[in-house]
Amino acid sequence: MKINRFWSWLFFGVGALYFVLPLISTAEFSLKMRRGAYTLDAYWTVLADPRFQQTFTYSVLMALATIAFGVLLVVPTAYWVRLKLPRWRPVLEFITLLPLIIPPIVIVFGYIRLYNTSSWLPLTGSAMGTNLLLMFGYVILSLPYMYRAVDTGLRAIDVATLTEAAQSLGAGWVTILTRVILPNVAVAVLSGAFITFAIVIGEFVMAALLNRPSFGPYMQLLGANRAYEPAALAVIAFAITWGCMALIQFVSKFAPRAPGAQH
Amino acid sequence: MPEPFLSIQYVRKSFGATTVVQDFNLDVEAGEFISFLGPSGCGKTTVLRMVAGFEEPSGGRIVIGGKDVTGLKPNQRNIGMVFQAYALFPNLTVAQNIGFGLKVAGVARAEIDSRVAEMLDIIKLPAGEFGARYPYQLSGGQQQRVALARALAPRPKVLLLDEPLSALDAKVRVSLREEIRSIQKKLGITTIFVTHDQEEALSISDRIVVMYGGKAEQVGTAFEIYNRPATRFVAGFVGTLNVLEGRLGNAGKVQVGSGEIALREEPAGGRSGDTVSLALRPEAIALGRRDGDDAVLPGEIADVHFLGSVIRVRVRAGDSIVSLDTFNNPATPPPRIGDKVEISFSSGDVMLLN
Image (cartoon, rainbow over all chains, first blue to last red):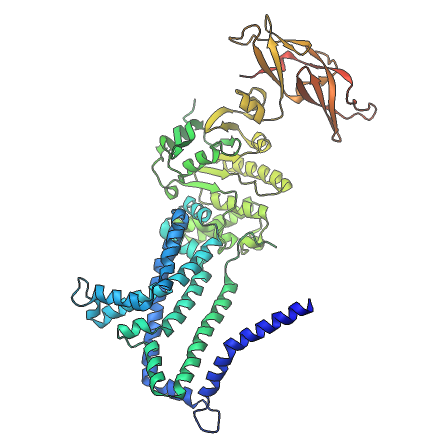
């Protein structure tokens, strides 16, 4: 028993070091901008940079748009498939997994070929059109996470019976989705939303190839030209991701409890 | 004959090549309490779901209050439904659940509040204590009461109950079924109750539809269903039944083992020498010769179960085993296995099975 515990702790320690050491090193390096002292100079330099503010704001807005569109796309689809087309669930799962298999660079080149200025829908011809294209790309990238989060939320409730109960009380599809289904999967949707937020904030390939002023390319640019600021930026990016994870944990406490969980 | 309030006419339902309901007909009067009784897979829930609009009939029509609702969506039928799994909305409080249908209908807030209070009063859950609770904070019985109140709050034309008591423990089941019946009588709402529990159906229904293989085998009151079953299935499914196999003789006499029973009515189309099945309820049979009984069969005690106030005795009569109940008498010890006995009954209680 004691030996088992020893090995468990050993493996845990090695794993933790593997993850934590690079982070500690990066954080420590980001504080050494001023010779001989630990300061937050690199952070102040980054935060004061107008390009940081512009790109970060742009990425936050893109993330919010991606989340809104993703929720509108995924929640009704996952709900409908669960309710009416359960046989199609494996197909939908496969489709939502494709973004993990197809590299973003392939997707974005496909977009550029399909929607360039000489195509039937020249989205890349304007900044707004390209923003829209980038948002669609982000929705695709976040699809595996958003779909799984929502599907897990739907699995926790008896979708079919709740739908029928609402129908028998006179509710139409919009009422059922907004007043019955969505509130009961809100926590799952929020989990998907926070993961989407973290993905969009750090995404580089699509934004760079579509030449949009987002946070990912800014981090890359800074990394290529400066020493301490990229480390500070990496720590900030990690903090945002962890903040999102913490929020997922926090909001999951407010999930409506299934009636089966009586006391 | 008054115009039926709910009329199910030649309704069929097929899933692919499988027909689960065939030519189902039923007229229900306003305020009547009808139970659909049958084993799993007999089509009772499918008929209920077609009335609710959750399943589209493959043929036939459904009329409620003189209006053909066959093509209407579930949310256009004004039908209240209670589900086996309660189906309360987990994100809403008890009061919000009950008021859901009224809110969807656009009823004013004050009216919703007053109706919710009225419904909570009907289901005997004090508004102050339970109104703000969430479904997970209620017991199974309380949840089903709230589900009933929610279904009744919008004043539906018909109330449908899909095995509402199946998930509850035995004690709650008995008290809640009586409560459902009392609320139904008070509100005078036309109700269809689906169950596979014969005791439930027999105890609370105005009429019972016994279903088997997608068909209505018999429609009648509990008394008719129990005492005059129309088919062998109904006779076997409702209550305990003793079946005696015999050979038809002359003048309506049937040879059972070494005994003979004179039937009151000769079986139609029966010929001498035909094998016939006779059915008797356990309470119709007495151990020994009972005054007034005109049929007596010799037998041998095969088994004895002491159940407290009642002793269940199984007697071998010819090739058949007959089960009968006698009251416990402290002064008389129960019979022993192997004892030679006689059993008696009135030939008027004998049912000839088709």
